[in-house]
Length: 394
Ligand code: TYD
Image (cartoon, rainbow, N blue to C red; front, top):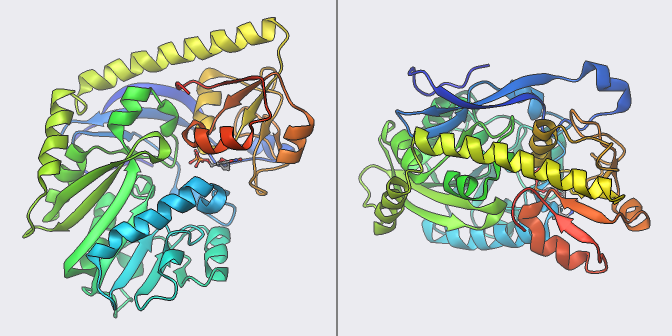
């Protein structure tokens, strides 16, 4: 499946090779049937956009087995509480609010008991079920023009549409933005946050790239994309989630933009964040990062050290497969998600164990795959006196 928002060809600049589904934690009996795709990333000059050239069908990733739950991190729960407080300035007491990719309802739960009418769209059934159980009205479907067309009471009457770490997942951005346009009221606001291209370049956190993350946005690309739909990026606010994200605030074209946008776009131009040149530098940085982490692991193994991975993140699938790190190097990966425990990591087949196993089988060193949750995790695991390491600086 090709990603298309313009007809102009995308310039490929890095190929991470054969990749499995990042969240495709797998049972041993299914190893021989595992799905792989070629993960190549390109630069779209027209929109200053970094994107996957090809990716699996969304139904392959977001289905009844999706193992990611927003509520698995205390830090993220607090973040979503603050996010909900932030968006309140864009709504009235009886406003209608929609969240795209509402996951287990962690964000919308913050509106419980208020007079606003909320609705979540969540295509992964198991996750949508948790949200419904939490009392959040949730549609178990993809957010697109077809699926919003029947929501008569929301069409042109929705004051706020929110999304977090979701818009970069949607291959047909044109359709998504048209659906937003159908729903938004005249003074309505669309707010979304996504991992930020500038942070990925700076940290060389190439593990932000996997099947679900089709686009890597910047303020410049978001501004250019929405302009095509007569919508305007009026503000952008950096966030420290997911190792560096950006919150984008979009309104109809008759609104004024905040001075902040100009500053951020100037910064992106100055730093050449939206250029093929930076993409090529990033490619070299990824290759160096791979060399460095392999050297580090080899040294640890040569000195008899045992290693486990902490948190079976989607991100880790990119690192493990790109660097060809498997169970010879890493004994197991511990994680709190019951849907992952007892299975094996996608592609490299490292066993996933629960936290109890981790505490009973402490290794000499830990590869922290959820480096973005470093503070929360190191705080929980103060008793571990060995070495924490990762491919990004901790
Ligand atoms: P995250 O970085 O949000 O993952 P992704 O790369 O998939 O977006 O981390 C979520 C995963 O990390 C999830 O599998 C749960 C696991 N995790 C732990 O096991 N323990 C923890 O303390 C935290 C914060 C996460």
